Length: 201
Image (cartoon, rainbow, N blue to C red; front, side):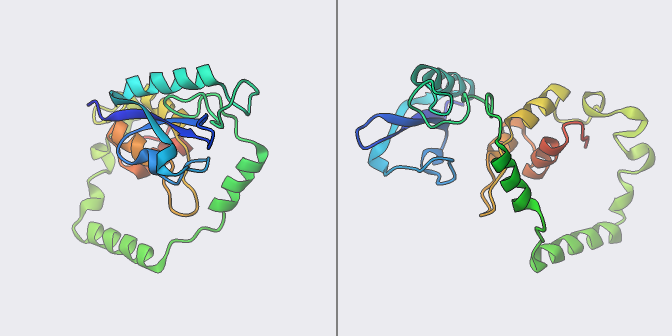
């Protein structure tokens, strides 16, 4: 579907400081790693693009304008663009922030109650036996692509692990939602694969 676009964030002097791609309201999403400017300084570069066309154009624009963090240009992008975090090595400070945001995180009472209810219902209906023994699609080493019921290839798993951008503490999902839609998986599985590309389901 041709519902992707590329966009630029402009400084007050109308020079670009960030290039992005997306669809729907992505250009106005406040979860960027740069400040989102007023709407009159958001410039749509190309519209009606396929996903791969938007990836190619984003990479092209970042390559042409260059990145400030690499000393090659004027953009505040921290990646080379495209499908994920190519060219970005998180700093020790960033890694420490990720670690702090995950440490000691507790589910709310309502979340724990929902999980408990769902598990109780699963056991009450006997569905916990559905994926055991010979019914387990991962039995006999049939993991990843060898599993006929697998939705994605091993190559897709590696791509997900590379493309994944973690969410922030305020509840934003990073690019998890976009990856879930791209690969046809639930966001929880995207997160699990990002943590462990060899994980099977």
